[in-house]
Image (cartoon, rainbow, N blue to C red; front, side, top):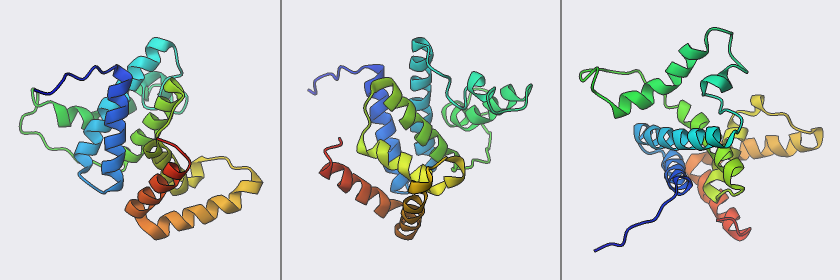
Length: 180
């Protein structure tokens, strides 16, 4: 008989997040990645709200910072659409969805940042998704002039090696630096 696991909500969030990140980099099933990322994201959003933290980007309150007034609920619903579709069939047992797996990158990136904010820790998998998102989407990030050239080189390297190799090398570098 296996012993029971005593898990906190943050333990569950970390485990789900790390597995979702690994599946993402190993280019596995995007539906499974999204389901794990969505569960993680919801746990972190609930804990964050309970602690009085800033809302996550895809939460209604978080969207108010970026979205045209009056459109927040519509966009929040879009963010939840795939997650709910993958978990429920009570209203639409024969339903079909057009799913864009690109959303997984955003969910994993923001969940890893929020997990780090809530716990003051980050794992090598979280470091990997944060770096990957930044080099794949440099248009969203401010960089000091002194770091722009190094960042461009990193982005070129990441594109040249692909997701799997990028992940393996980041994990190896993290191990050398003592990151979990």
